Length: 431
Image (cartoon, rainbow, N blue to C red; front, side):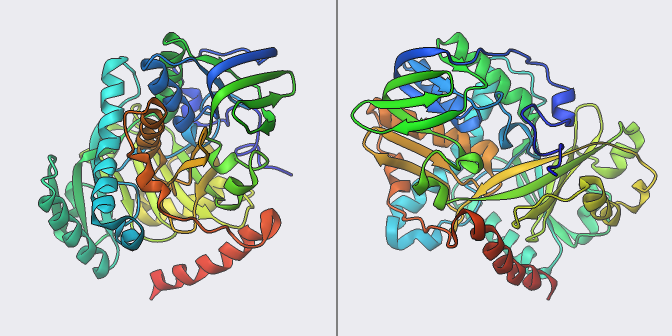
């Protein structure tokens, strides 16, 4: 039996869905249409690609299988963290120093795109800057020192600050951490309100959006034909943004991405005094373990506590029972606080943890595999694709130089095989 907190044709019963302010709905695709660009996927990648192209004057049609923001874009932890998520040094042979520098700059740009979009379209999504990485081991502190030195060398324009164990109470009310690093260029927001507002902006710019319009067949060619159960689109260009839900759309993309489960619980609203004890600067925070914890306060003073990344393909029977012990370990004084929401979903992970952005053929683009850093990286991926389609930039081609491995075992066996592999990294966290 599927867990209704993760599998449903409607939004899961999350805090985000309960506090959604942008409730526009869009029709189902009926009949035949033609367009310059067809985008598959109503998450951050797809919606922002459509919006970027519409702002450039293109005729765009977007197809979403369920509802705008139904997948990871509307279920995630709501943290916007600078960078593409993982180090780029490992790709030096493929992209060189110039490519490394370009991707690093794009990682900074990603957060700026979100801030600019929120400002331009007056989006009410509780955007607040302020983030802190949390250390549980001495090697994490060394990583933070290296990261701060690197950011300083790149003239990063926002405050960064290393914290000792004695200073951690400035950021988080827990004895679980031995230090941290503040980054005021990163922060947090309400992701479902952001994506739904961006879709509304795209529609205002002329994008034709269709919900409940799952793609059943794609025929690639000089003109692409995209079929749904009730309609058909003919497009000069196609952009596939299924990410963790790309299964069945394209075998190549499906083989290069692993859907991994990630989960969140939300407490009842907390007193101002308790919020000050938990997160006195109202920052988003995240530790550095493989089975990481990440958490923040919502605008109405709930603790949103996430983590428990799973690679087995199976959801926990109870997200609360799985995540509550982690929260109580960090904050034992919350043991009597009620949990009012629990939800989860799939994020997309590639074998090398670099976002996959490129083309299957000259007129068929894709973006996927954000490995848990999708809120911001999706926005820069969309910009790169739109720039390339418009012919005014080749920045996307840096990502195309990196080759991506297929996960072994096919759809049935690749999740269990990766779950075994991840056990090794969990053991490294312990010792």
